[in-house]
Length: 293
Image 1: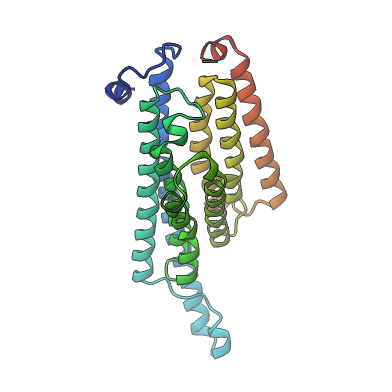
Image 2: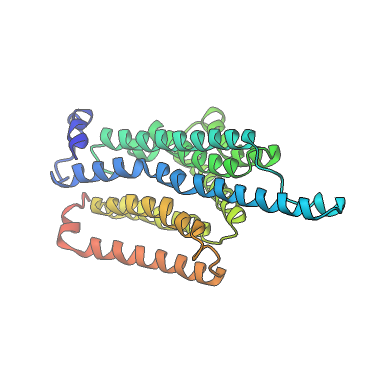
């Protein structure tokens, strides 16, 4: 909150008089907090991946010692070397840094808009929105690459969506008409990231992360269509949830093997409950008071 008030000069006269004093600092503070959640994701997955690779290496070494059949030996998992770990750490850092830069660009855009989120606002269609979209793609590309850092084809595929998003404004310009292309690239990057983590840990929970995109897209559309700015609080809630809960469940030994049907059920429930909570906020007197239409 203290940092939020320090950023007030960025808004100058852009702060809409219909935005109540308590709301915009809270929105800014929540966004600032949420902008660092990629670090939480890295702190969850990086050590878990390192331990997983060590376990695989120990298993491979034991089998190699007790098995003299060369054909069988060739099928054992590759040893996770120091070079692998270094490359993985580099991709973790790239993904986290790109995502954080994108998140802070979104905050700057909101500051320029006076924290009013509209279809033609800076944070929705300006250059800060482009950096934000690029950050979302880059973060998941880094995640997918960090899981298989020495597989050149998989690393190239992981960063393909990010490269496409970066090339979009150069070739087509940045406008609302190209958003479907950008959203498709974001979906591809999220899918690749979820698949990479799920395959590494033998878990379906990363797809809960992927499903949260439905919550976030619905939330953004509802804010712009209704003008109720209080709904903007839910955006950060969905973001924090998506970067933490699915990956904690993916690496926890008690939960990572949860059947797919339960994961799908929980994912559907999260979308339903997210929409229900938005409906409740929009129906309250406080929620209605933050409407700008």
